[in-house]
Picture 1 (cartoon, rainbow, N blue to C red):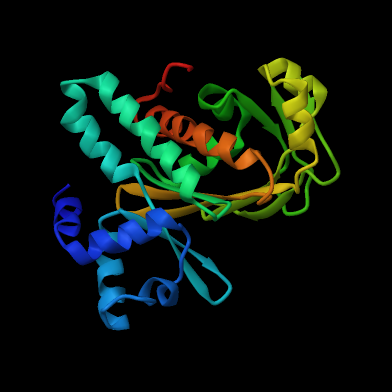
Picture 2 (picture 1 turned 90 degrees about the vertical axis):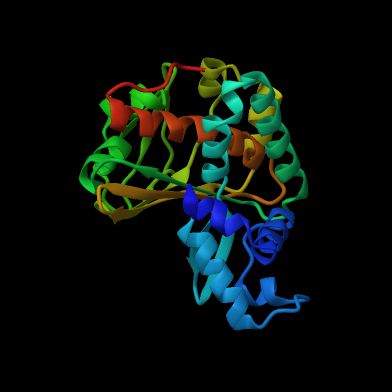
Length: 261
């Protein structure tokens, strides 16, 4: 946490975080616009923020996009504030998510977490049904080769579709697939109203990507999901991913997932 506090102590770095809070997913050039700082200075500040885990980056062609990563801030809250008032912490976290969803005009979700495990073990947890059912409540059937179908099983419902496929399969490094087929059976199984399911069904199909980067005794896991900018799936998944990934981390580090919400 020393690196986090040192990074937040500088007003210029806080300003950059504020700008990303207003609009996530900006390039270096966009972040430099309107700032009284040289491009090199902005780049150095971003490097400090990324080293502290306060931002995460994603490559899109030639562009390097920067996103706020809330994990270190949540860790600070859990260490100090929650021991005094856990209910208030939860309310603040809900407020933060609500504000972020209101101001973000990007429809890309990015989340980075650090798990004390190996890339091989994490890959197993992302692809083996026995693992995914424990922390996610979802089982996948696939041979995990590029272009292969992906069968999604949840709550007794089975979803398959010719367009529900594995897009990238680079073992222990990157996994991506389309997300997913919203059937009436699935909606009934998980308690989604039919009118909501109907809205989801007409959205442009989403894509989720898992990037694994070994860092000593840990693995940096970055989850990126792109959404239909006109759809409602973004808000639903933005609230769903943090508890799923927290449960994944807990399972790999302790042997038991978090209690089901």
